Length: 201
Image (cartoon, rainbow, N blue to C red; front, top):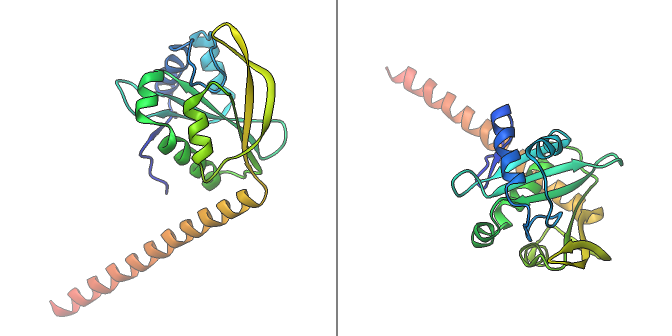
């Protein structure tokens, strides 16, 4: 079972209400993958309902933002979407731990054929993350994809797919099997200790 350190799963109605407030609370965000975007709480709640999975990024008073996976039309293909509730706090904390944990969760819990993330070239935080990431590879640049600060910006698409995705899935499966093997060994050891203690009484 995966333990979350940087993320808090959105599971209940209360979690969903909190996440919707985080999504709609920073409409001028330069860190959110969609760029600056005005969303009402009900629009944010609808986006959460359409998500395959959603997590609050831990930190601050009530969270630094929301990460969610949007299932696309093609089976096994997901878009990773980041909503920043506080750009300065998220820049200070960084996104590496949250995004890496999110990717590991998706690879561990669902059938993934492709993960992709889109963001504007002005998004310094995500650009630095993606360039240093062992997971994502740049697929290309799309002209005039985003609008921020009164002008159009080019967009970037980064993905995990193909041989890299298969290597990561194999590594995740290997880690999961190693964890199961450890649990079996620990259980046998506990049983042997109990038997030994029962014999000595």
